[in-house]
Image (cartoon, rainbow, N blue to C red):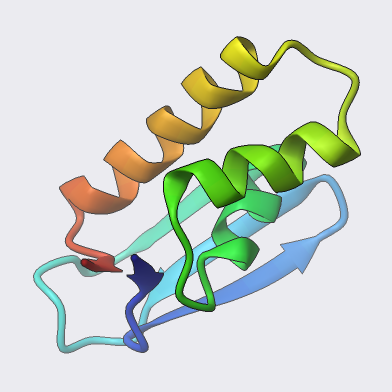
Length: 86
């Protein structure tokens, strides 16, 4: 899976913003925290859910199950606005 090209991202320190540039069914932006931003940035290249979880596990001192739930929430949100190529 990968973030569609119609979406751009912007990092504002503790806040991460994903914006639709048009051409998708979603017109707006999503604001997320730094963790969500890392997940979205990983989705800029072709990757899998498990690869994202592995990368997050290396960066954060948290149980893999908790990281997996967080990754799943972000992926589902991006799916809901049709932001992912799968």
